[in-house]
Image 1: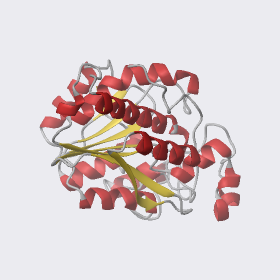
Image 2: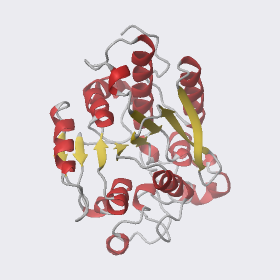
Image 3: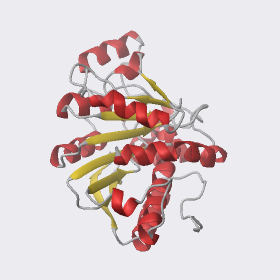
Length: 302
């Protein structure tokens, strides 16, 4: 498919994502970008939507500041799908006009806009929290995962909260920091609340959370995990070479897919894109995307 991509390999931030969303909606009028909430510092958390079908799927990215490359991968996927829908040409062998006919897709490319700003530009972007962020390592390359209040968004969902808090205390994590503090109570952060409210108002059939790194797919959480989840994860793995796995330690509770499975009792997946050390380099964008593209398409269609 020959197209001048809007989503080029680059270090992105809130402004870049906002511009790309506007450009994608201008190029592909069947897309629309709407705010689903705001960050601690008032930056909008946008959802890019397509379709009006009854089979609804959510894909969200950039929960962690240093994982900003996942937002760019999410947006490139949106762009390639948009081009396939505009032209009618197949993408990875799929006729998406037909395959998405009964679907509604919502992408949230930047769940944690404040955290990405801090990770890319440093503590000076954290407004009233700048000094606290600086003391917590906000200016150390590769360090910042949390939001502006030092809460790790993917530890702030209400799933296994007591177990998570105990594990954090055992690791000496007791307050705001660069990573892995779940916050003062579950759903304390507006970024978390934005996703919770979206999922409580839209009956998604399943959700996909994009993280990095490891080339793994997590699908299970507790006794309410739907039986079909493992098979769905296995299909995603089969088309990508990724591994079906289970998180451990502090990653075992409090995540978005954990909460979705526990609360809605529908499939939820975490996909760990790429391999290496976060932040994954921009130079790896094309190879990561090409390896994961079929997985991401299947994740929307399965």
